[in-house]
Amino acid sequence: MQRCEETSEVPLERIQVFADGLDHPECVCWHPNGNLYAGGEAGQIYRISSDGRQVDEIGRTNGFLLGVAVSPDGSWLAACDLRKKCVWRFELASGELKVISRGVDAFPFQIPNHLVFDSEGDLYVSDSGSPADKSGRIFRISKEGSTMVWHDGPFHFANGLALSPSGDALFVVCTFASSVERIAITPDRVAGERTTYVSFDRVLPDGLAFNRAGDLFVSCYTPSRIYRVRDGVPPQVHVYAEDWTDHQLQ
Image (cartoon, rainbow, N blue to C red; front, side):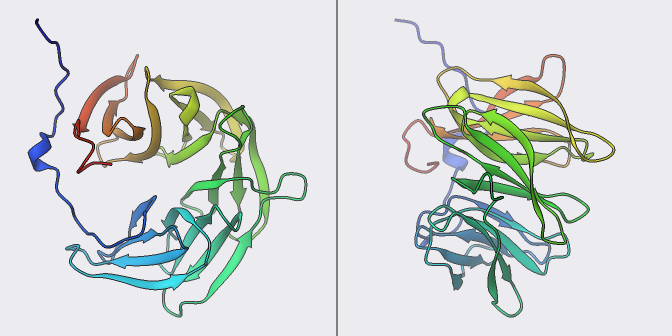
């Protein structure tokens, strides 16, 4: 029987563990000093050395951390907390930890999932809502500390976020719609046109990140796969890395 397989750009044997000993890190972010940061299932805040050899717990919320992001000036870490239903600010120099948002009165956070800073220092946050229905939203926390609903959706489990390299659009994973959506950001920084950027078949996308060339990388909850999406009409979708054993790349 002949088999047809889509090969990945990165062979399985090149996928290696970078750092271990962490408790279910849902997200990782990079600091300009070379360190990486991640959260844990018991609210741990981890600092990982640039070579992956040193992992230190530098804080703890006693919640369950999902998305993390380093502020534009590199001084603090924003973190989504599933259990506490809030977004934290963790000062990297002092270790001070405080809640900066629980959503808004009419719409408190249900599942604050992922977050990304823009160049002005404002923070976009995905609130996933329920996997069973379309109830996800996008919030924006200003650098002054106020929170607003930036896009009322509804999104079918809003998850990973990424700003376009030019900052003119926000890309949103809709996990249970098996898609990534694009929301234009107008010059006055409100939400503009909403379109489906790319859709997948029998795939649950999770995280997003752009590289310097402007390619969008989409990591999946299942299968154990990362896609590279090159902009175009239509966008070109390639399997960047895949672990069919579900062992190294989980």
